[in-house]
Image 1 (cartoon, rainbow, N blue to C red):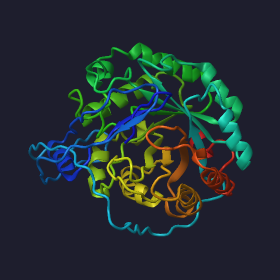
Image 2: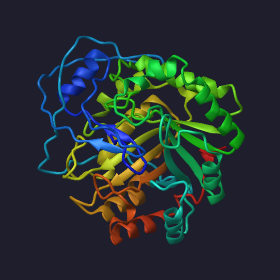
Image 3: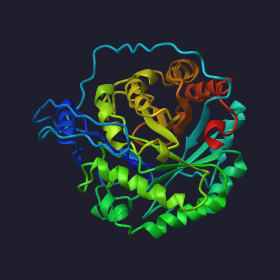
Image 4: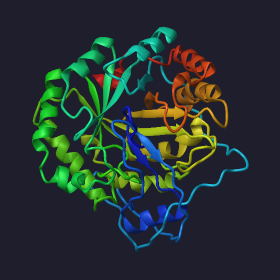
Length: 406
């Protein structure tokens, strides 16, 4: 639900509304939305302003086998509709679980200057007394940080953290047909480039999280389903194609992160068939991922109002944990300042919800960029203090997450 931004990140263009979601399930494919040109390297989201012109109901079936795709039952044309601001805050009821074990969740951050300048990472660590488990950045196949860089990885390793590289098969222009799944990946056109990264990561030898072609639905990325003729089956085949090239090299240190999109107030019943149709299979994935944003009332990414951490995460969490038992990372997390207390949001997320209500989460990476909203941790002194005090809890590890780095 995010998109690429100047200064490093990613492109997110969400399609909102019941009409669009129904059309998605009926056609078995996700229709592309109109969005701004991407501004790599970075991420940015699109605000949907169109109103729905049609509604439809349909069912889709899929199996989480890594090859199944949703079966179309008809066709419908719909455009996204903005979600109205509710008059009251919904209550999310979660079944309590035992608190997570000591040191079982790793914290991380993404900033545009990472990994070349880790000053802010050091400031966070000094304040909390905890080494960041994850340092994140973005690499575009045809743009920012395209070439494999051993020095980037070494900088993070020497810092005492694990790299999380979001590896994006495009040049930064939304819906660019030159980067469709068939043209850019399944044709074999970039096999040598893929192999260069596989060889480089094998030579690096230490653990690295590779988040490949994320948010592959309800988006305008050129690899997204419904864009450039891409299908769910194409996506699964492309993922496996890239993974198989890596398998020809000693890349056991590479941990593959599969990260579908989140869609505002969509329910788990809506998410599940979409996620199932796009999952490459457990033998091709090491961790699953979800991006979590509380946008507040001034930004419409499908839920233009203040939402708690649980309200944002609960429904996609139910769906993705039903698809796979793999560990769950949250590679992009942030909250706006407008509409509520960001400090309280962080405190509730890190001190109550993550330790007790979402036991599958093993890592949280803060999207520390000033963009559509005031996302950075230091957007206010109270927000900074909330992060620092929460990070000191025993549940948060200092340094790498053992489960994913073994």
